[in-house]
Length: 128
Image (tube, rainbow, N blue to C red; front, side, top):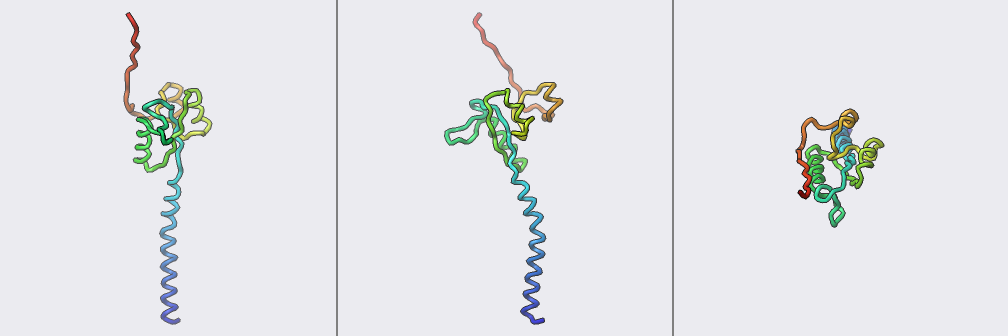
C-alpha cells in the first residue's frame, strides 16, 4: 500500500470517527427544537399582542424568561375567554397554561407549582 493510500485511508477513518462522535450531539440538539404551546388569557399589560404582533406583557415576559432558563422554545397562544382556556389543555391544543387559578378540582387533574408566584388582593369600592 502506498503512502498516499495510507494517508487517504487514515483521513477517511478520522472522518468516520468524527461523524460517529458528532451524530448523537446533533440528534440531541435537534430534539430540543420542539416548540411548546403555552396558553394565556389575553389581558392588557399582562398578555397581549403589541403593534408588531409579538405577544408581550408581564405574564408573557415571565413565560419567555422561564423558557429561556429551561432551554426550551415556546409559542404563546392567547385566549380571550376562560371557558375555552382549560379545555385547550385537555384536548392537547396547548401543552401548558400560564396563570391559571388553582381550584381543588384542577389540583386533582393538573400539575401546579408548589410555591405561589405572588398574591394580590381584590377590592370593591362602593358609594356610602
